Length: 425
Image (cartoon, rainbow, N blue to C red; front, side):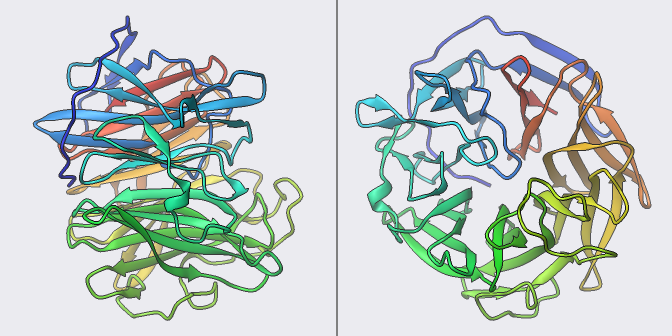
């Protein structure tokens, strides 16, 4: 749930292409709408959190994206806002009186955003071992302005910011921080105190010698506890990661724990954390040389069920396989279990998962084909059935958030045609 106040904003109207799709399994017919703003070719990532929603009688969506920059190889950061009537407003992210503009760096320099309990936008963008590039609205619903000096750890070199809104309107942010560049890159957690309008550091939550942490997702449950998902790689970095890991943080007690409830001491290492996907077969930590050919993890997302138990979707390449299959992880009797959702063809580093009641949905993207974006549902036991959510469209990246009305809001990126789609499923 998000309790936010909506401010008045100018509305830009445009002719939109709306597409009625076949009925999804376990859902009404999905609807896609082309966002009426140009995106940059750099608007693609697997780890990001570029989508937020807000429901207070009406439904709103906020889609942070990279727009074309003033020169080739650059981009500007924007937010596309959709109101309940379907009208759009483009909100530029500003650095003083000029639009925030940075060099392209696909897979790293993409925006993540969230709305706080006062209705202010918070955007982190274009950071690949850079110091903070943080922007916040000075008024409800206004254009975010440069506020990097407000962040703790001013010299920290930051990558992969993922953030979410707490039920009380606070924000939580996880990044990979490289202040100890000699042996490790840490997972660091921060909190925006909404009532005080200040950022503070919660803790370095994950750190191990000769390892780098890759943040994946943050999700709150109905108890107000924060569920945290991340991967590990060989130091300093690698396109292939390992030992997909989980933690739960209870802000009310300050305790970090595993899914079985046992407390952990911070910072966790890959030897002490709760591991969802352990090393298998010939899997080893390898240096960064592109994407090595061995087994490992690449991209993961998180949801919680009606009992506040974590559910995870992730891509994993098995020993001896040439493709990244789609996996589903869940907890039973205090232990992690894994099912295979899809393993027919190569997938992209784009995945997400939602859950309401008994309805779990895993979203993924295939590397080739006329239809590339799919939703898989668990039809019985360990059997999953997939349905196309964007027929005929070469979708390459996605993000999904289930809003407070129980509707999955889709963020779908078509890099080939430089189009961004909003969807309801």
